[in-house]
Length: 451
Image (cartoon, rainbow, N blue to C red; front, side, top):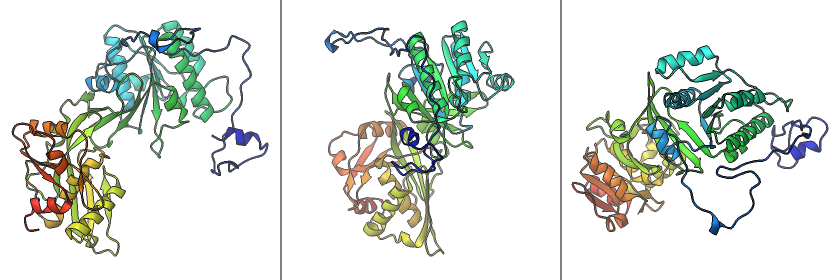
C-alpha cells in the first residue's frame, strides 16, 4: 500500500508520487526487532529445520480430513478440513458467515473435539442466542477477545481441535500501535495465526468482511497467505446461499456449494436444479432454462427476460445475476441478426433464485428469453438451451456439454438446442433430443418458423 513511497515524505501525503493513487498511503509503525529466537514458518506436512530435497524422493501422502458436518461445505473443501490449514471465509454482512461458523464448531464439538470460537464482534450472550436458534451443541467454548496475544495464550492453554476467529478485522496485536482493522494490524494478525496453525497442525477459520467493492476488507495479502478462500454469495432477502471456493490448496478450485437459509441455520441443498425450477411459471413468455456449470456441478437455472415498449429517449437495460455489458452485446446482436428492434424497448434480464451466471454458455438461453418476451410467445416448457454467441451471430461450442445434457434429462427435459458443432460430436442421453444451431438466425427459425 505504497509504504516505501510514504517513507520518503515526512509530512502529510494525500497522493502516492509513484503510482498516482489517492488515499493509498498507509501509516505503519515498524515494530522493534525481537530479542528472542527468530520466528519460523512451517508449511503443512513440513517440519522445522527442513532441508531441500529432490521431488523424486518425496512420497505423496493423502491429507487426513475432518468433516465439517455440512455435506456441501465438505464438497467445496475437497472432503473436509485439513490439519493445520487456514481458511478465509468472506461474504457480505448478514449473509450467514457467523451462522455457518457456529455450525462447524458445533459439529466438531458433537464429535467429541474441543473447540474455541473467538468472538470479536458479538458478546457471548449474542452467540448463545444464535446457538439456541440453531439448536447447536452448547459445549462450544466462546472467547470474547480481540487481542491476538491473549487469543494465542488461551489457545495454547485449551488446545482446541479447531479455532475460529470472527472476525479477523477486529483483531489487534500489541506489537503494533495502529488501530484494529488497519492494514498493518490485519496483515500481522493473519500472519501470526497462519504461523500458529501450521506449527500446531490446528485447522483455523478466519471470518473476513467484504467491502463495497466485493473484496475482503484489509490487504489482499490475506488471500495469499491462507490455504483456502471461500466466498458466500446470495441475496439476503432470499433463502438460497452459494459458497464458492476461489482458492484451495487441498482441493478443487471454483467449486460451489449450495445452501438454504432456514430458521435452524444453513441446510445442504443436494438437488439445486429442482429447487431453482420449482416455481417456474408455465406458459410465460420470456422464460428459458439454462444448464449452467458451477464449479464441477451442473445446475439448471431459469433465465427471465422482459422487453417492454419504452417511452424514454434512452431505453433502460437492467440486469440481475448476469453481466450488464454482456446483455448490451447480446441485445445488439439480436437487433442486427433477428431484427427485433429492441432499441425501442426497455429490457430487463434476470437469473431467478439469486444465482449469478458469468459463463458465455448462457448467451443462447438469454437470447431465446429476450426473443420470447419481445414476441410475447412462450418457449416449450421441456426445452433447455446453451451456447456462446459471437458478434457475427455465430453459435460457438462450450465445455461440459454432456454433463449439462445429463442434468437436463434427469429433470425430465425432452429437448435441447445447442451449438451445431457440439451436436455432431456427442451422443444425447436417453429421452433427450438435441438440435444443433450455427447462428442466431437458425435459433429464431427453429423456435419461430418463418420469424
